[in-house]
Length: 264
Image (cartoon, rainbow, N blue to C red; front, side):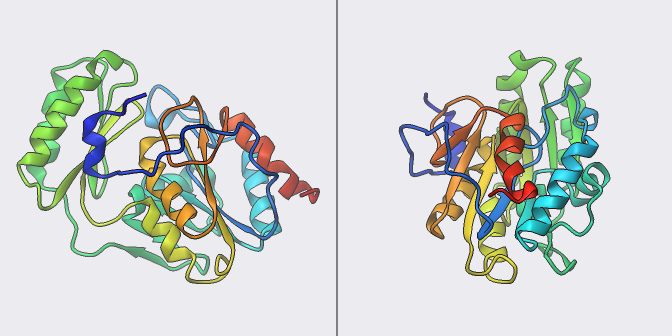
């Protein structure tokens, strides 16, 4: 499978040509970095429509305790949204693809001096207003064009995304995902979060495992691999730097469950 050329703007993976659908059993001594949408929860037609069950919250809470805190959620969503959905404020988390994060001690940090120009947001909203079924999601450091309800407009979203990035290429970058195109500030990615958290307890000295489904997770896979761990791709096969694959969110939860049950 050939990935869109725009991916080269922010990702140059060392590709693995085959994926093992049976990753090794999860271990208590590893550190876990896990994406949210499409990895822990199934996609919904709109970003606000995802469902987080009490069973998932209980699983994450139990795994977090079992691995002595070495479990982090790493997502493109803002931290505030993650906290609303997951409701486990003691979990380390990274939001907006690594531009903001909360460490294991509860300290929240953000990449400084980043802002999204109002004209970018206005242009994105006008684009969406002219295309029924699309949705604009405005975040602190990015604006996302969602086309899940009208996937045929993905190429159109990529084109307007390229145009907006070209208006300020030193500050902006294009980040395509699963039926979404983000125009976001430069300054960090999910791999940076892995590197940062591995420098301190409780992740220090642990083998990192990054689990994610989207193109935006490739930096996380690569960072985990550099540090002696590996990535697990969730969903269908594609070119990736992950080493293993799980079929979907249900398989991810089943893979983690032995940690929670004390059978790992």
